[in-house]
Every structure is written in C-alpha cells, then in structure tokens.
Image 1 (cartoon, helix red, strand yellow):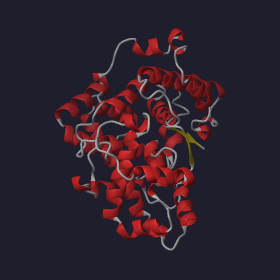
Image 2 (image 1 turned 45 degrees about the horizontal axis):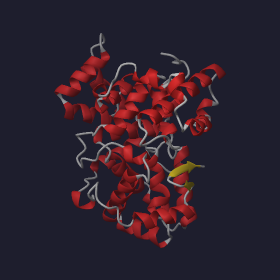
Image 3 (image 1 turned 90 degrees about the vertical axis):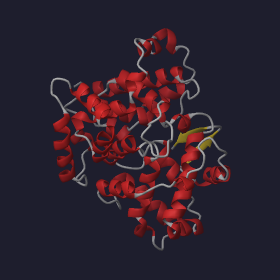
Image 4 (image 1 turned 120 degrees about the horizontal axis):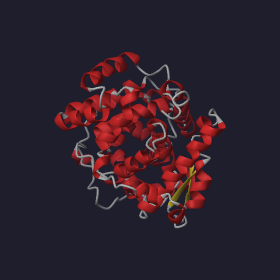
Length: 356
C-alpha cells in the first residue's frame, strides 16, 4: 500500500462511536467468502452467485481491507473499463483541452484540508496530484458534467479509501455516475444528475425526501416549516456530496456502504434516519438552534452510534406513492431552491454550487 502507515482506516477514520462488536461479526462473515489467493475474484464471484446476501453483508459493513474491492464490485466498474483511456485523458496533450482546469486547481487544495494537513509534504503532494488527475479526466470524459465543486470531495474520499488508486477511482466514479444499481428498490439511476447542469438528480432526491419526511415525521416537518427551516437548507448539502461535508468520515464510510448496498435511494433513507434519531434535539429550538444541532454532526456531536442510524434507515420502507416519476417535472423545487439562495451555506453561481 502506498501510504499504509498514514492513511490506515484506524488513523484516518476510526471513531469510538463505531460499533466494534457488529463490525467484528461482519468481519467473520466476510472472511468466510474470501480466498486469500485472489480477494477480488472471491468477492466478485460471491456477488454474482449470491447478490442479495452480498448486498446485506455490504450494508453491515465490510472489513477495511475488503471495502474498496466491495464498492468496485457492486458498482460493476469492469463493464466500463477501457485500456489506456485514463492515461490518455491525463496526458499533457489532453489536459490542455480541460476548460475546468483552473477551477480544479483552485479546489484541490481545499479538499479535506484538515486531513491533508496531518500528512508529510511529499504524501500531501502525491494526493493532490492524483486528485487533480482524476478530476481532469472526469471533466474530459464526461463533458455533460465537466466539473463543479463537490466532485472533488467525492473523488478525494475515494482516493483515501482506495489507497490512492487513481485510475480505479476514476472508473469507480464513472460507474457511480453512469451505472444503474439494479438492486435499488425504487430503480433510481446513478448520480450523474447530482452534478450536471441544473442538478436534476439533486432536485429529484430533494423532492423524494420532502414527501417521505412529511409522511414519516409530520410533527417535526411542521415544526421546521413553522421556523422556516426548509429541507433544502440542510439536506441538499448532505446529498450533494453524499454526506462528506456534514459528518465525520468514519460515519461516511458506513453511510457509503449502506448506499452501495441499498442503492441511491439509500441516501433518502439515511437522511430520514438521521432526523428520526435526532428529533428530540430540535424540540423548542429556533431556526438557529436547529441549524446549530445539524452543524454539530460534523464533529460527531448530537449523534448516536452510526450503526443505530443505519439500522433505522434499513427499517424505513419507502413506498412508491411518495416517489415521483424520476423523469417527471419536479414541481415545487424551484421555489425551494430560490429560498436556499438566501439562507443556505452555499452560494449559488449560475448553475454551479460554490461551497463555502
């Protein structure tokens, strides 16, 4: 491993709130399916033979040493691999075509700065270079997306988890964007629309969440409406970067396990679970008080064990009647987006988010 001594899961992600007993039980199950001679083949074969069992194991949490392979497997990146494509995209001749290069260069140093600050200078530069390479390659390979701030966090997180396997990270991101997770009960496709112009997938997920929130927690939703604490102010930030800016990374590891095991609709269920398990924290609070509670999640405060959140998410059954047609018109989102411009922690510039 390139930087094993520094980017181990224990040092970078570990947190005492993680339920170690559950992870130990899960690890034993994973060991049963692994043949040491070929870990990737073992995991791929098990997924193909027993997809439902594999997905349940993934939601329960794979051991750190198997996590990246498990994510790649469920996203089926092999269906997209093209020899020499990545190296061609990051070559000097192609980089000159990248119209988002200046934006990428500005953002790479702002990606998980607290984590990068703990690293040796040579390791930090290696990470920054690989991050820039992957972002340049994505912007060229997916011109319909190009680049917007937010992708850098998703890619940066993948680089940490993969131990800086930048070409694999590139194809894994492309798979996350392009491939439909067929096991998603609601048949929600990949995340491409989270980052393409006008953010159609983000708007879709926000609408789904709003409808489900009203059904699952009507009293809390009424309170939030009364104090004008609109869903768009907080939940859009969770979903836009798949929780990475609002929660500790140890929580995000397990959130991503759950999302890949459940499907993209897992983001809706996780968001509902988070407000369910923290709803007592908002009692009697104003807009500022509720916002302070949610901002504290980043430090791991006011949250239960991450496994409790996942268990609650898994107990939520999203019915199709609260899920609008994904291709349909997102009525009502426009007004909420306008409200967010005035109150959100984002600045809205044209059709791109600027994170501040």
